Image (cartoon, rainbow, N blue to C red; front, side):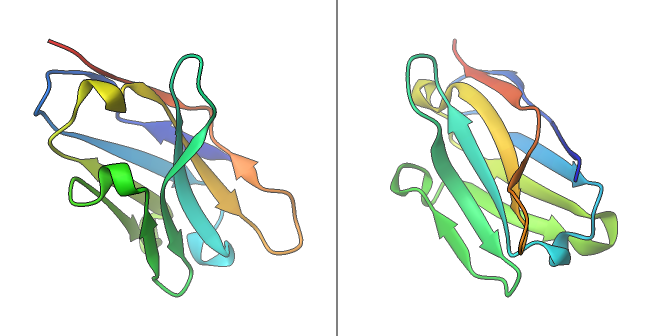
Length: 115
């Protein structure tokens, strides 16, 4: 399983970015597609997760600001990030939780929120 994350960059506080994660598999073959982030000196944390059945789960810190979605024909999941804050600065990773297999991780994309 190959996951290619993209869309990171430098944005000012209050700005928006949309991350994409293109998968080499049909995303409905994964039990869960998720976005994680890891800031310098901190543990990797869950940002958003989307189950095969369409159930969404968000970290409390991003509720109302971030939206995860998917485009099944393109085998791609997205993370729309609005009202970005400096504390959102991190490397963002996508993950696929596959039935009966080890989780697959993408390579990460840097998001920096700074004025």
